[in-house]
Length: 507
Ligand SMILES: O=C(O)CCC(=O)C(=O)O
Ligand SMILES: [Fe+2]
Image 1 (tube, helix red, strand yellow):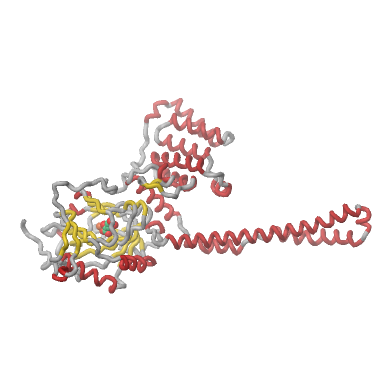
Image 2: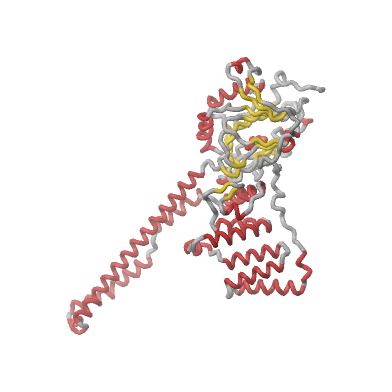
């Protein structure tokens, strides 16, 4: 569901509009350059003033002071200058520089990423790290699930992640990121500007490490970390006090070392199957196959659909090459500007939720019916179901670590079915883009991992033969590691298909 009520833009829930953000960043950098120009102008004016004043000194020393001051023009000139010009200089020195550029920066603030955007982005990285069992050190050096990229994180990038993890009481993963920060700090040349802005120093890092270790119950290690911090920052009184307090505590209550305080398991809140890397294999006894579907509609004799069976019960098939490259591009470019944060329906309270369990942006694609006409006919031919009774197409783009946690597409309880409210009998999921790493659709009950293949569509029934919810169809969209994952879904209603997909009362 597109979730209009969320006024937050959720910048990191889609990578589709990151180029817009980069444009803004470029404007801001240009603005800063204009600011430096203003500073240079002021600097130049002052330098010119100083050189004018120097002239008097040069003349005076060339002529000798006596002769110079005897001339009334020189004496008058100095008095006049000192009486009036210095006022001018004072005013000039007081005049703020670059007010226009400051105003520009202020005006752009509402469109810039906010704290919640950073929060979402950091959570995206955390989910990716947990799901694919990656090391902080590897991620920070651009090694993502075995593939080395020419990108890396700065010490500040890493350290802000540390703070984020600590805020969420994720101490052990925070420690990994502290190590990664240290490495990044060692790798980087001294960065005076950044140091000025935020000042991450080895002392601060060791102090943070010590605190994380205390939280983990590792007091001895924490004491060592404090000692190291003090080597870098021996005059820091607060640091010294913290160290002494901890030392005292450990002497008084040595048994405390082994008490591990509660800490959040790093992945406890992520509902994902273990198959995201494709570890799940189909049971080998299944005789699965591909066929050219020429039968479910006479038209398919002319244009058969390459159909790959992935599961017989529940019925899951992959329809190959059903959306052309031109169509895929059209769906993406048409949706890009209108994407809204995706939501999930809470059937208990009949509300739309906008949570971290579905981190993508989406759009109900009903403004351009001509774009989907052909697909309607194709789906009707391929599945035998009536697209008159279905929800709109929904285009989605996933963001940083974007995922859809394990869920069922059908929503109604069995006792509420077929009582006038339609539910999702079947799902079609079109893959509109290539996803270089991650982003598989996984059915944990079926041991099935499907990696996006651009142009193909996954089709499955959410109900069993009796028309009841089939819990075997639980599925998830795994976190995208690298790529811009575009998909388009269509949910086909149960009501209206009675004659085309009749329920079997008994087997
Ligand atoms: O993106 C995916 O792989 C899964 C999407 C999905 O489950 C859905 O849209 O209902
Ligand atoms: Fe789904």
